[in-house]
Image (tube, rainbow, N blue to C red):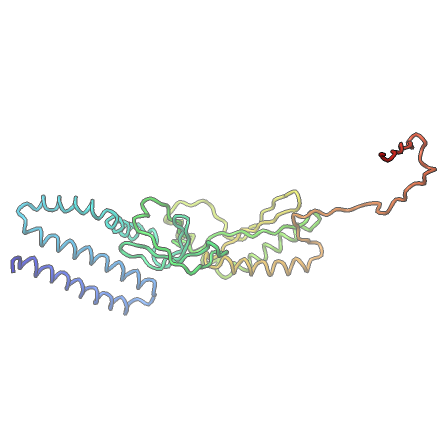
Length: 307
């Protein structure tokens, strides 16, 4: 064997990494019940092991060269040129982990695409796409994959990190003759009914977020705003909702709001159509010839047929 120390050391490093991975996987499985945490711990452990084993192998083989600095310099330059994108993806994976950009289970928007993160690998992130031709931020069934290095050049919008809720809006147009205060009360009461069960949890999360960041004053209770248009009065309710339940929430709210609006005779739904009222309808009779003033009657010359 030409290089016994390097060869045996490489085999030991790989075997030790494999054993640590198996033991760590078993410990995580016994001590963690949350599937999301299990996946996060396992992927992070494997990432650390891969980097550690790779570094150990490099040091073992670098000892065979008289000038280790030259070896690492040439190796680094070669890797930087030949494996630019993979190395950037590995660095992006570390940034995602250490920077808490997102993790498995988060709902994010990235490069104009939205989805739920289902895998964060060493080189690629995968998410279950939402939106596109499907309304209401619901899944399309497609898996979107992008390199981890893309986080250095694009903004990541995280729907669920640190705060599990977002604000959504619901519009109700009513006519000018409607009882606007009554319509406003219907919106507020319906919104309060919907947010009642999770509003206290949202307040707790917001207080925790304020302890870490400088936030402006945020109102978590349903609020109604009014806007006057050329055809109707638009009442818009701003309310808190789980980002994964926007469509069911909107449907639930509209069903109850419309039931209560129909029960109130003083409220009418507005629209962009226009109502026309014609006054003095009736058919006017044609006057007799003798009633027409003479100056308005003239004889039309008769044309002779051509020979």
